[in-house]
Length: 262
Image 1 (tube, rainbow, N blue to C red):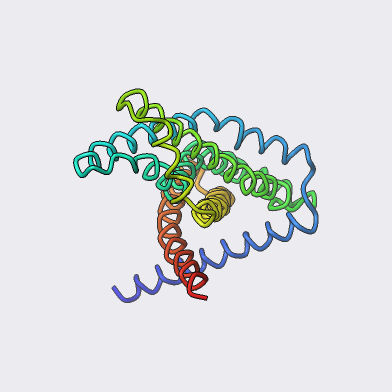
Image 2: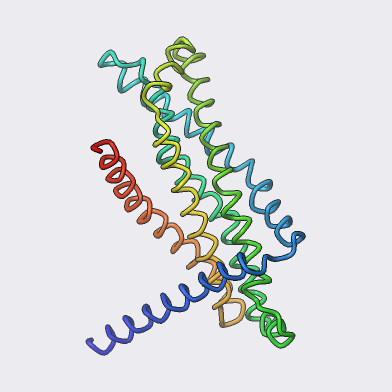
């Protein structure tokens, strides 16, 4: 039992070391020798434009649910007027970044991992190395650069759609005044809330792209290995996104409290 635990611990430590090494190499490649614009443009389209529909639907329907729940729960206590604040604050600080990251992981991250896994098991990555081409620079860096730019933008789009969806439900279903829906947002939603959401979106983008690419680059075992790596990449990304969301929430709010105390 002890031997098995030691082996598992060593395997996890080795995996973490390989992942950190890949992230450092990709950062270095993206800064020192940026990939060709054509490679980045292709990934910007694949990650950003092709994800607009699923992000829009997710944000829109989430706004519906938030508005309905807020109105029914708060209306009983005479607080229906804060429905807009509940929708806006929830979308900006938590649900917008989280749900966007989840949708992009499921649609784009799994695709990245499957592509790189296939290239790994068919020895295309080894062929790149034999031609003195750095696979991290050629394959991972364009995806990384596109991800850290597009995922915050997709998050903003999701937040906007969520607030608009909540507006439609509050105004046209519950007959709330548009002024009552939007005016409290100006008071209760601050720049810190927006900054928190964007910081989370950026971190989630780094995590999901690098984890999915790492799993793809380390795939082995033929077709079964491709499926296994793809599944592991999505599950690992989801777990890391949730854990990092909690840590970021705690850290950002502690910093905010310290700044308010100065």
